[in-house]
Image 1: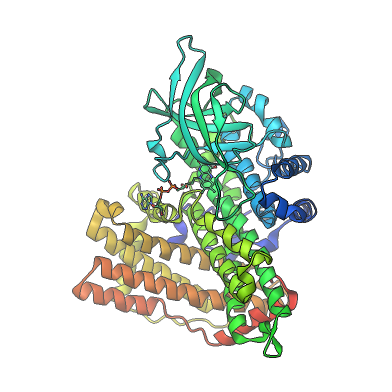
Image 2: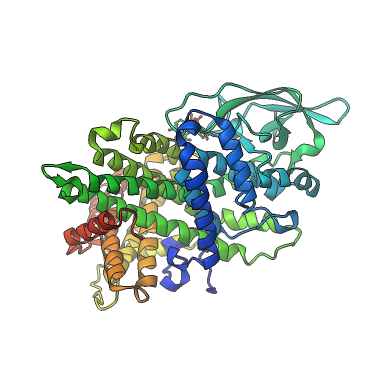
Length: 592
Ligand SMILES: Cc1cc2nc3c(=O)[nH]c(=O)nc-3n(C[C@H](O)[C@H](O)[C@H](O)COP(=O)(O)OP(=O)(O)OC[C@H]3O[C@@H](n4cnc5c(N)ncnc54)[C@H](O)[C@@H]3O)c2cc1C
């Protein structure tokens, strides 16, 4: 394992060697085997019941969860001393990806293993873990997470639910309504956030059977219809004092730290869903004939397949690079140390910006994929007899829950700039260098003999552009920048594309010398296709931001920099796109 571990946000100022990252080509046999077990489970046990699950036959879902328990899929994050597997993040992401093929069931599964179980695993006392963990690992009980309320969604800390200590000091009495709670229809254990004495935001472990707990009617939803989403009503709900989770008044830590991981895992889930939808799209393109030819033979359809492939390739590269990075950092913490999970949380929090990037990039990628898959199906994409329609409906929620994509975008520059202000990232010094490069253009010859030399130069230039634009924004607004959301969104969009492109390029570079000529060609084609799009996107956001923050000579200077720093020679782009499309049509699935 490499010595140097990249800090959160550092990718924007540092160069990473390809050998330092984890890629899907690095999966171990054990990881592949767990992935196969997960895929087989979904194919044999869940997919045949898709219709019934979508009609909310929740018995099948609950049975499915028990089978997941038998296969060990619910204990991946649980500590070994309680019978868990405590697997690495890469394996966790792989399982999430495979389970994603099950549509709504994946929502139940990920809510249970993520926001459902992680609060207990990370913050529970020995007694709490002994009482609940086994039930959750076996699937005997399903877990849910109750943060959102009718009046507090994104602004989660403004929750109104209250907790008051009973006169005998043995219970807290919880009052309030939690809204949109996944798994609520059949969950037995809820992590509920409420304010003690209307002030101290605190988490509680609440059993379904406690007096005063009731679950409202199922929401009628646009998609993921086979998942359960209900309000949870607390009316003097009697919760024993020993069921306070973590410290009183520190519930926000639990809420947000768990969400960091959930966001990242959502990236893997949507990655898996996109692979499933993609395969359906290319299969249809091979079957459907118009004008005497399969529609897949038309350039217009191949154009879509090329875009989907390149975005998926970038998303795939991003998820596993980030998982590997986290594993590297977390493996440095000795298991069994008393404050193990505190250090672990810090390790995850380090990558809060990257977790938000994963959530936004991958969910936007899935939106593009399902939209194109419907389009490839023409009218048949619009009717429920074909799976494209369900993929399309199921996708939409991913840009809303686990923090909306707007809120997640705001987290990205917010977190990175905060680190810079705390002196954890030398962003200011790097921004000065970037301004130097802007004012004094120098010609750097690209060594074309090295693979991906053009893309690596592009990446360096895009980072310089990000530093110039963010530097200009900081200079103008200083600490008031946090109120300028349009600017922050543009910076976030730049940071997202740069990270995705870096992951895409480094993955190809790492695997280039150890792969077949055919795969080399595919790597080249995917990187070229994605690099072209990413450069255009970064350029657009940089120009937009320049108009937001500058005028006169300063504006002209940044606009000319945006032109220079986004320059990318994509000679052979059409052939590259056709190469990707042809390969996908040949294999009828995602090709990497
Ligand atoms: C199917 C489903 C399942 C869910 N599961 C769970 C669950 O298990 N547990 C749970 O606790 N919650 C759950 N949620 C709730 C979900 O996390 C929230 O819906 C989400 O956080 C957004 O909150 P909101 O719906 O109140 O929207 P709002 O917060 O009202 O947002 C509305 C719009 O305003 C924007 N906005 C809000 N604040 C800002 C801001 N500061 N700056 C810029 N833009 C802003 C948002 O991006 C959005 O576009 C679920 C929701 C759904 C629909």
